[in-house]
Image (cartoon, rainbow, N blue to C red; front, side, top):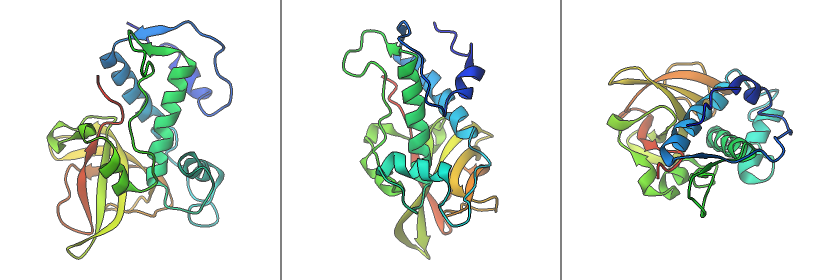
Length: 220
């Protein structure tokens, strides 16, 4: 088993840079080990952005524009909560490839790439990511995604919001990291930055209601 915690501080110091290890020897892991390591790294990457905010205008700033560009391929002033989680997942995948941490015996996808549908739209993320990624609220774990849908009264809209689960508080509450939200109470989309939040596992009334939870990586 890999002692993957060794050197994690130096790993995150270079996480957002351009340097990568040169030809490291392959480190073989099982699917369960890969999943566990990636979900922990995913949370750490997300936490590293807490405190990042828009600059002079909504959805503007070099870091936020980097989130958006990673999904769309170009910079635009778009809602970016979904782009944020996609960016964090991609960073984890890139770092594991750079470290040559791969699945033992796998030829089709040796690095267990994330299986999120590539989109900046939260509801498309839910609908088009493989259904096998879905998890019930009772089974949610840190490193998964929570997705909400916006309602106008009791009418669902096409808009949503997404966050990264970072902790299980109890059978009713979870902790998250979310982009494009605010420090205010309630589930807020189109906010000004990346925040740590405390959320109910399920919101079934109000303007933002829980759609469900997604695993970011397959477990087999």
